[in-house]
Length: 428
Image (cartoon, rainbow, N blue to C red):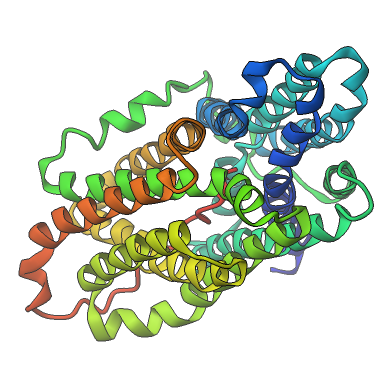
């Protein structure tokens, strides 16, 4: 096990830095767009939230498209080159993001184009999570694999918890300082990996040709299954609302309460802390007491209430309890929904069905930011949150009807499957 320590440390740092960078950049997007509004055309200044949403969606879209590509390349050519290439691409994207404001003399359109190229590059090379998981599967035994994969979940939570706080502090130096810091951390991990990361997939175990790289095939594995359709509806509507809030919250809090990057970053960090506490400690105690079905529906009800609170709070400090309710509800609903889905399919179908469920979640990260930006610009500041509350309440009603037979029965003691951070963002 000692010989595996350096590789696993590298994998942990890769996932940690990925989410750290997401957490650093996410609160800054509205302020980059605001920076160019003074010299921008009229259409740009009247579609501020939509542009921020499109920047977020572009990252998620290309991560969705490129994750299976990177996974197939790692099966064909090995994990090590794919991981190092992904990290170098991510570092380049952060540098480009940090340099975007230097293009201001060329006009607002030039700055916006650089921002989109940076986010698309980050999304294209940031889908290495499947390769990191495959590396762990290569170097661990079945008995130790769960512990190794759990390390990835810990890296996600820790990265997003610290990222916004670091970004908020560095933004007091300059708007570009957080992006350059993320780039430096990524380059340091590339150097560490170059010297310390061995290849985990021997040549004789590699694929002879590239596997399918069509991400839509993962969706086809789940949408036709009648037994899990209500659960998939819950996953779809819940994550659509959450992705809308994730991309729009910085715009909302800046417009309504005058919050700057540091204040917004600490709210995102607070959400991360609440998610880590719930999924890391409290959830394992709640599942044996109440069961997965009750917790999933209750979590969605809490999320719906939290969205209404965000839309209606009269003073800024009340945002903390409002988003805390959302974080608690999401941490209750998402992992339990995933676990309920997994229990309705055979062991042979786990990979394809859960992969399809993750693909569905990734699509919400593309659609949600665009919808929330459009609602914010054209309907009103509260519109994305009230719409999200209705979506989640509708999903909770469907799930309550579908899962009600399980409420009065035996409590399920099985622990819910670990889930990627809601902000990985894929999500970004």
